[in-house]
Image (cartoon, rainbow, N blue to C red):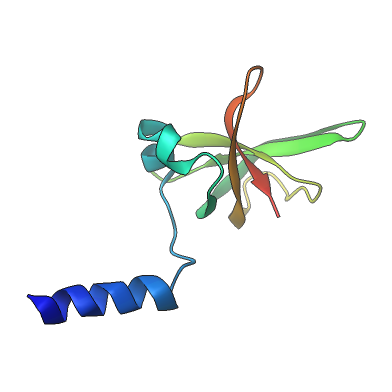
Length: 98
């Protein structure tokens, strides 16, 4: 049992960029706010209004999260985003991309 725990600990230390599910973020927002996560999915609804820009990331299970990003991918393209989970009164839970 100690060997398995040691392997898991080493994996977490060596591979911190594991992909997080949007559903997990949505189900446990307090755990993730302020934390850096990596999510994968399909870009949708890209928008740029003045200095505000972003898109919706949709995962295969239909889970969605807004992503604030200066770089806008083409809609329907597969993307991997790393950023900080944020909470805003207007936008709710979103990811501020790095």
